Length: 154
Image (cartoon, rainbow, N blue to C red; front, side, top):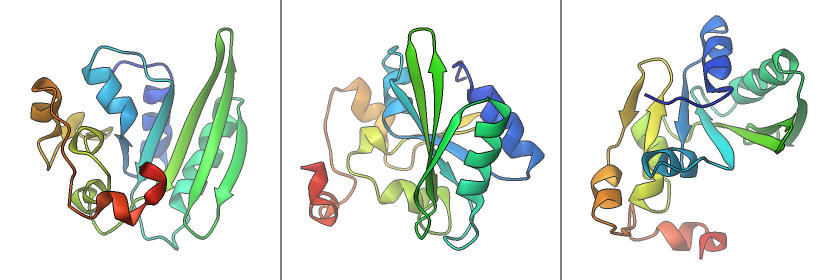
């Protein structure tokens, strides 16, 4: 179970809008390591043209009295920033890649970053055994071309 400020708010807003959302990447990895993530990344279900990620980000920004910055309309990516007493919370919302959570997670770099937490089902989605790699302190690519696909990762 994920227990972080604002994740339940995002979940409730997504449920109200009938949007499925997955907490992904470094935030999930950090939580499994008992660390507090510095930012939250959400994969949002729907086709790239559906605009659901930006719609959800806008609804969250409004409900949480936070800032909204649309980073990439074509790819469906938006950032919500919430000032906090100890700094600010950054929440990135991105349209899911592919037709399923597995497709989206398969496009990530390392297995330890390809773990999701389904906010609807309240369960981990881990098609590449990232949790086992995390426990074994093993760094493994999701697929051989992961770094070449996005050189910024290197």
